[in-house]
Length: 208
Image (cartoon, rainbow, N blue to C red):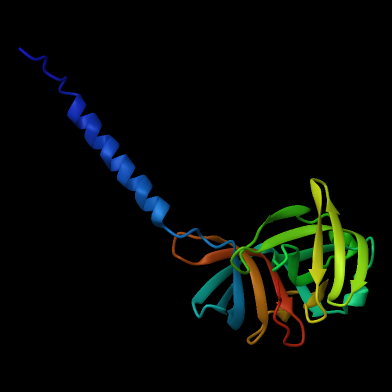
């Protein structure tokens, strides 16, 4: 007579199937955004209503320790050897990273996010925060050699690449029509909490 399986087997199998289904469902969910880019539509107390670049209506709850920084355009000539910069890049046709934007950090922000990592501005984009070690002017623009604690990278910055820097700002700069990028974490009601917002000056859209 064949041995009977323990009666505990079926409940355990059912639990395993439910767990596997739950993990599969979680895997299919899109990742929660860590940044919201868009245009402010209204500000009501500590709540900011933003129309995202993809057309979604997003509500942002500002924390008590919110930091607001302004973004303003500068010249590529302002990027010097020794500058601490951030550069969003995508692979160029020849394999060299091509800058979609460059932002120069002021001295009090030197070291912010140092390193190189995947970024969400465009598919296959990378954010590299590093110190400019060398700048070479060529026919296609500037080639920057940037160095960070774990390595180095050459970046091609064309003449039409947006170059910006950070300037002081505060909550009074958060008004309808302003272009912003907010660093967020999701809340249970579908809205977001933000403790840092970068706002473009003079109608500028933060390019990062």
